Length: 349
Ligand code: IPM
Ligand code: MG
Image (cartoon, rainbow, N blue to C red):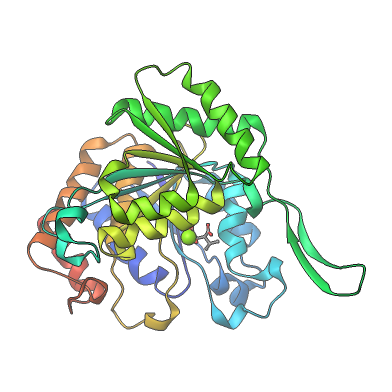
């Protein structure tokens, strides 16, 4: 019996993961579930955003369903106690270096996008974001300049093997899709990016069948709203991937729609699955949160960690059906509640 760790976290995290859990339970796959606190909730209850017991559960589980972390009451804490350290710590401790963030327009949802419908209709991309390196995990701190001014610094770096493995994931995915790969960097300015580009070109030699294009991140941000349909598979570093995936979500219509998978390798065993949105403290507890990203994350969990493609597709089809039936949470311009959306997905299953 597969064990699913549920880490609801802060803000809307508990509300959306509850709906995702309902959907998983309804499929009757004989899964078992164990919940543990994480983020600000864990800090307030246990004095640490990623308590030892939570980390143990994450390691023991066959897969992790994660909600969101972020809690304004923790803003003044030392960095190591901030809620975000929980997700960064999990990614690092469990070695989840490959982050898949698919962004696909669901038919009938075009009007929810801030882009013109005929442009938004063409969105079908996967952003493959490197997740345990880059400026996120480099040396960082505060120091003083020689003339006594305060200075903050964060070191950006990538080693060649870190780039190579993410490039391989990107090429392999592209090979299974439309055979187009766009690698996003800032090689015109950053040495880290020049190495990234060099290594991606080396890997490309093994993938004659995939068309590779390099794109500077500023141009990529512009192209993504100009003509998002040109993106098939995108590979990029941790920081650029964080930014571009939020942008891709809005192109699709709502940040409440995008799921993600964080994996150690292709096989995907013991992956972490989470909506790309944050904890949205301003709407927490009001039944306004869109649970679709969490529910679609559960689908990715079945696909990548439990090798159950059929069940994953069943969930995705049910979400599409619920949406085409006109159920919309406020982020998509509707007035249905979190649990009404969950009900509609369950009914469509
Ligand atoms: C994400 C989030 C996280 C990140 C935060 C919560 C640390 O924005 O998963 O995109 O920056 O990676
Ligand atoms: Mg982000």
